[in-house]
Image (cartoon, rainbow, N blue to C red; front, side):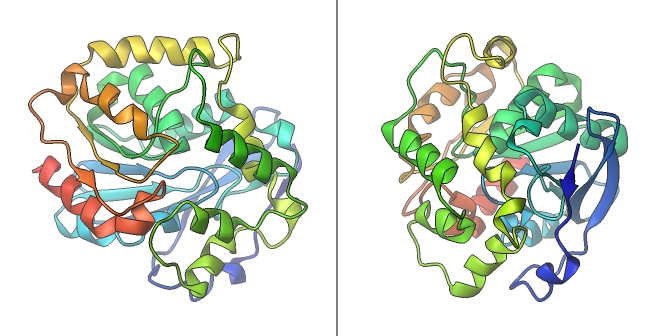
Length: 299
C-alpha cells in the first residue's frame, strides 16, 4: 500500500491545540505498516474516554472538549483515523474499506493501548467505526455517547443532503476540507480554524480518505458492510451499556437517528440533551456544552 505522510510543519502553531502526538505502527492489511497518531490528556490511571472523529475532520475537532473532560479527572484519547490528521494517508481511494477502518481502530484501541472500561464518544464516521467496536467487543466498553452519528445498514434511504455532500466531495477538482467542515457548522469559523482543518492535506493527493469515506457508507442492503452493521444493531439493541444521546438541533444528516438511539435499553432513564444552535459538527459549534453533558454523564 502506497502511503503519504503529512509534514510535521503543517501542524505547527495550530490554534488551541497544544497536544503532542503519540504514534504507533499498525499492519496495513497488505503486508506493510501504517503510522497512526493520537493525542491524549488527563490522568493515565483513569478510565479512558475514547473520542472518535469523522469525515473529513481529525482529532482537532475535539480541541475544546479535551481539557474539560480531562480536567474532570478522565483520561481522554483522540485518535486520527487512517487517512486523516497526523495518521498516514493511503494514496488510493480503493485502499480504504469500512472493514479496514474498523480493524485499524480496533488494533490501536485494544492491541496497542489495551483500553478497558472505555467510554466511547462518537460523531459521524466515529460512530460508524466506534459503534461496531462497541458491539463486537462489549466487554471493553462501559458507556457510549452518540452525537450526530448513526450505523447505516443500507436498508433505509440516506437524506438527500448527504447525497449532495457525497457527490461534491467525490467530484471536487480539489477538496477544500476546511470549507466542507465550515459548511457543516452553524456558528462562525475563523480563517485560522479552517486552516487547521486543512493542515493534514497539503495537496489533493493526500485526500483519498476524505474522497473515499462517503462511498463506504452502506446505501444498499447488499453493501459489503451491511450485514456486519445489522449484527452490531442486534447487539446494541439488547445491550444494557449506558448510552447518552446528545445530538444537535441542526443536523439534517443524522438528526433522525436520535430517537432511535433513545429507544435502546441502555438509554432508559437518562436525560438526553439537545444542543441548540449547532450543526453536524457539534464539537466545533458547541464543544464545551457537549463536553459538559459528557462529564455529567460520567459522573
